[in-house]
Image (cartoon, rainbow, N blue to C red; front, side):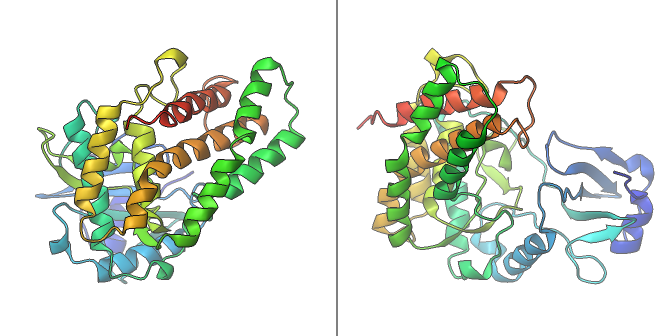
Length: 343
């Protein structure tokens, strides 16, 4: 993709003057190309928007406008770095065929894994506080930035379809993995049962640990970032993705099958932090659904990884041919571990 001259684009759309030497690639995000922009004493994050992943940029801008108008920063103990409006009030700018946006830069540390339970507690507390801060907003006013993102029933049907139409050879290993996931139909039914009784919330919907900025000494959360997936959802989604990515003893690409277990100490820290952050908001049924959320979010990623492998690796980036199958096996072991309650 050919990007515009950022110096000209920033001055044209934001009236910000900056030298080309003050714009540098930043971070290791996989979706939007990101730059750190310095203008005098001010610093910003510039993102070239990836329309191939997010097909509905106008929906994201719509959701961000609601947040800008509806959330009082005083209700948050951290920063929510939403896009800065252009001179015309738009949250996305377009220049020479490229879409981009500008947001405040927040200094601190982003990490890819949690080293101790205290960090897990802080992470879960922060994401729950966001849900609580958005309690007066109508979740149905938010548009789906990624349609049916966490719809377990849909992902199960997609796996069934991929199984029926795959060109992969079914050796014993692949057959065992496919059979395991197709046998999770009872989990899908439980998901549908929860959907009938849980209240919709405004959720972050992508609660990985690297979507937080911590202070340098890791003693508090300074910002909740990557706000493109904010939309209507259930509290169990956000808690569940934390469990999947924080409470597992191995990363999702690990092939050390025998080492893939649940770190119950981190799990409990996540639960305590989420309950503290959601205190006064979360209803009894929501609290009861949280353990299911961990299983559900692990299962949905197993469905998605396995379906992508069966479809020929057309969605997730891979470094070797069977990586999506290995990811599905990884999630299978974690799902088994989550079924072994520590209580």
